[in-house]
Image (cartoon, rainbow, N blue to C red; front, side, top):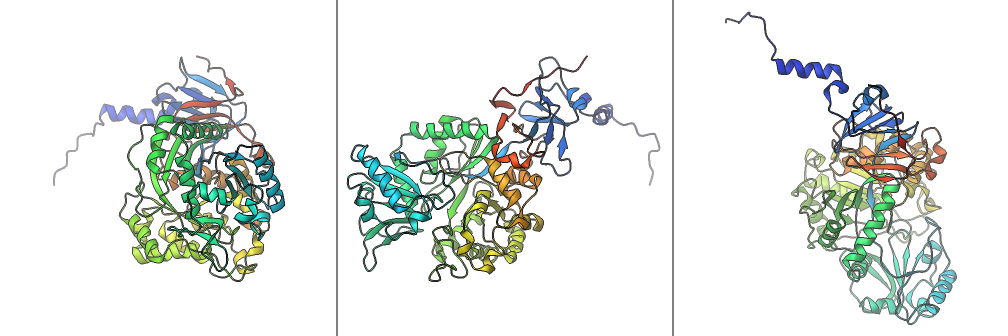
Length: 560
C-alpha cells in the first residue's frame, strides 16, 4: 500500500477556526449586546459552578468567565452593567404552579398557610359578616385548614345557618377539599344525589345518598371548571398577566403551569393573547380520559403546550394520600387511589405511544402506595430502557420509600418536589414511625441519581422560591435530607429544565444556552438566613431585561 508522504497542509479555514478557539472568546466572538460583570455568578453547571461575568448576544449566553475576558467582548453599543458583587443565578424555573383562581368575595387572607387555620366558629363569623355586607347571590369564599376540616360541623347545613341566600365555597389550603352550603351546590347545578364523577367523590350524610357539601378530588376539579366557565377571556388574561409580573420579580424566567379546571385549548388561546414575557409551559389537566389536550403551537413565542397531568391521590392533610398501611391517627383509613385499576393502566400505557415531551406523563402522587402503583404499572408495561426516554414525572412524591427510590431511578422517573411541604405542622403525627423515618426525601434522591426539580405549588399567584430554597437547605423534619444551597439551586434551575425536556437549552449559565438569568437583592450564599427576604433586582428572559428595579447600574467600558 502506497502512502503520499508529502507534508499534510491544513486548510486555511480550519487553521483560522482553531486559532480563534485557542485565543478564547474575546478573539472569536462578535460584540456582546449585554455584559454583567464584577459579580458572583452561580452557573448551575457542576463542572464550573462560579464565574464573575456573563456576556449575552441576542437570545443566548455568549460567554461566562472572569471580568477581563468577558469585558473584552464589549464594543460600541454594548450595554455594560456593574454588579458590584451581586449574585447572579440562572433564571428560576417553577416546575409546578397553578395560576388560575376563582372569582368571588374572598373573606380571609390565608396567612396561616400551612397551618390549622380558623375554627368553625371563626369561619361562621366570617361568612355571617360577608353575607351581611354583600348582595344576595354573591359568592363568599374563604380558605380553611384542619381546625375546620376536622370538626364534624364542617358540612352544608352548618353553613346554611349563616348564609342561606349566598353561595359559599370554602377550600382547604392544600387545594384538595372543598365545602359548600346548599345555595352553593344549587348555584353550581349539583343535585343532592349527584353521582360521583371519574376520579372524585362527594361525601354524603350517613345512611343516605344525600350530599353533605364536602367535595373531593375530581369532583372539586369539576367545580373549578364551572367557575372557570364564568370568567371571560379578558379576566383570565388579567390573572395571567398579574401572575407574570409577580413571577419576574422573584427571578422566575420559566413556569410550568397547570390551570386546573380550564380546558387546555382555552388556556393556550388566552396565553397567546397575553404573550407573556416569561417562558410558560402550559400543561394539560384533563378531567376525563377522553378530554382532548391542545398540543399545537401557541401564537406566543414563549408559550409551549406540553405534558399531561393526572391527580392520582390526595394529601395527608385530608387523609386521602394513598398509603400502604392505615394512618396512625385514623386506623380506619389508608387514603384512596383516585382511578380504577383498568383506567389507570390505560392512562399510563397511553403515554408510551405519545411524543415524549408533548405527551409526558405527570402524576400527582403523595402516598407510598400511590407511588408504588405507578412504578408497578411502568415495570409491567415496558422495559426500563424505554421509560428512561420519557421522563415520567412524580409530582410531590413525599412518601417515596427507599426501595421505590431505586425503582424510580431505574425507570428514569423525575421527582418534582415542593419544599413548602417540608414545613407542614404536625403532619408526621398521622404517619406510623416506619413511614415517618423515610418521608420527604431530598438528599437521598440526589445521591441515588434520581432527577430532582422544584416548584412552588403556588395557587392563584407566584410565591417566593427563596422560601423553598430556605426550607430545602434546612429540611425541618428530617435535617439529614437537607440539600446544600448549591444543590437546591440546581434543582430549581437545571433540574426543572430537565423535567420539561429543556436541558441543554436553559437552566445553566453556559455559552449557547438561552439568556435567562436573575440578579438577586441579597448574597444568599454569604447569608443563607436571609433567603426568605430575597427578590430579583433584574430579571432577563431570552436576552431581554423584563424586570428591573434600577438597582443595577451601568458600568464603565474597558479602555480601548
